[in-house]
Amino acid sequence: MPLLQSDHVVPAATAPIVEGMQIQVTRNRIKKVTERLPLPPNARRVEDPEMNMSREVVEDPGVPGTQDVTFAVAEVNGVETGRLPVANVVVTPAHEAVVRVGTKPGTEVPPVIDGSIWDAIAGCEAGGNWAINTGNGYYGGVQFDQGTWEANGGLRYAPRADLATREEQIAVAEVTRLRQGWGAWPVCAARAGAR
Image 1 (cartoon, helix red, strand yellow):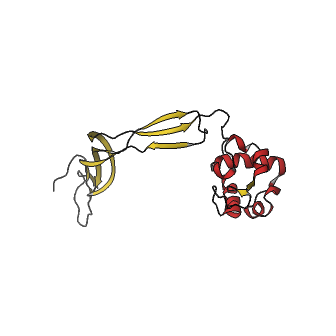
Image 2 (tube, one colour):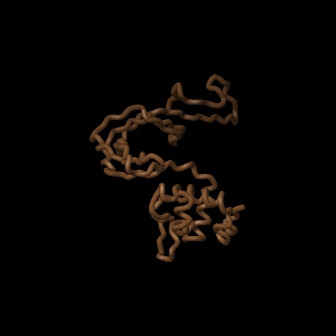
Image 3 (cartoon, helix red, strand yellow):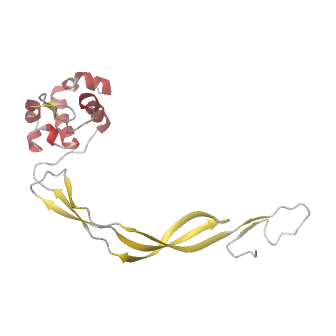
């Protein structure tokens, strides 16, 4: 097979040939390949002033379309080493998704810090179930009683802890921790290594 400009030869093709010489040829090729692939739907976000800021609801998941994507495929000695998309043609358009996002004032949730600690406490307190309500008077992942939930600002998010998101519960738990310390969860905080 003749050498192409993209091929690499060691030693160089201009080197004199000697007995016992080993020549290594690396054949570099770029070829174009077209594949039919799914075309993910775009998501249209609709703001909902009645829903908490930390929440999103998928109203319509949309429907993926199809597209023919052409790739430039790099091969070294017949083995693919990489590919980049260079063109695409939409075959079937995607139907857009619709996502309702909460914008209710006063329901902002601060970023979760020490999420793994809170997940460990929830694992100990509630088996990791942030939506648990067993009817024993304690609710959610870190097992708030109703009085603690209300006293530490939980009602801004939900009527009970089990109806709030993980992030909302952690926001209220952080307020509780600042006021009462890790002693609000004496056994599980110790098991989680919280200090």
